[in-house]
Image (cartoon, rainbow, N blue to C red; front, side, top):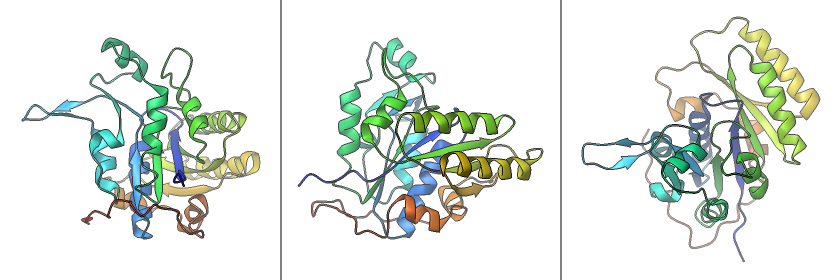
Length: 256
């Protein structure tokens, strides 16, 4: 029987709101529950070259380190581009196209290897990935519950509510949201947090899954410390027995 893809899809209210760090934190949280976790980033734009001439993407490296299943970089992200810009522009500049079918297949390829897969989208909800499709279409393809990362800064209430509305309009399940502090201090932080909590629950029945403070250093384990275990057990359906094939990878050694 084909393994079932289980996990969530992480999107954000914008770019630079901390999606990768929250995704890595979710992977570490899952590892703490004894759940084999794998991260998948369908598209990554922006790569660096090391002293040996090898190119890699920082976000992909972070997901690779946070997961409890050992994966190669191309298993975590099959569409990597060197230019740090919108993915469809990076692809065009390199004379390439982002293959929707390949991204779908790459995500499902992790189902036999991990109990839960955490997929991180590129940029915000509607970032174009081709002439006639975008990140929201990929979310719909995969059908995973959506976790929304809200960058806590001026304008976050409007951005969060509009994004949540767009997620639900596509028939997707908005499982909840994470408040992520993207600056050392924010005027009226508590008032913004309270408004978001009330509005997201009233309009979309979407609870807050964690409030992550501005952390230095900002590590995946530190993020995991600030996530709501009770709510995440519901999101990841951890009261149910994970369906993993016997061919699944062994858990890699994790360092704290």
